[in-house]
Length: 74
Picture 1: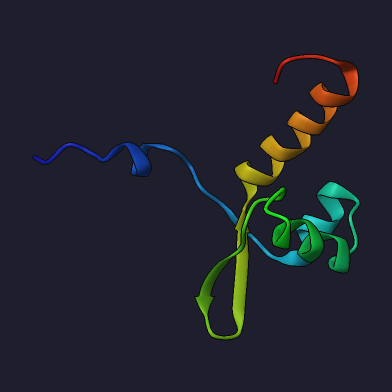
Picture 2 (picture 1 turned 180 degrees about the horizontal axis):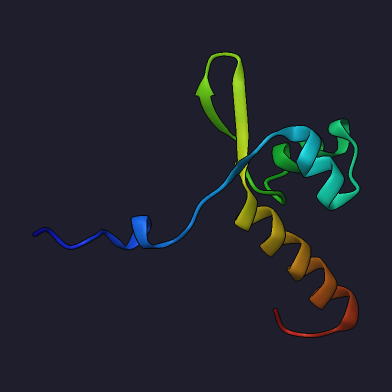
């Protein structure tokens, strides 16, 4: 039996832009502005008309902002 790759051991959940907005409180334009500046997690294209983000990357980004605000190391 083949061993599972490290990537498959980590649970992943794709979320759409509306949920990213709800989690972060950022507007659509601000999300794309920060993505362009490379200071926000990048989207993943599942098809030509469907893009998603990895929920854990969005949560990590939020945690880093909280730590940054509090002067903590994330």
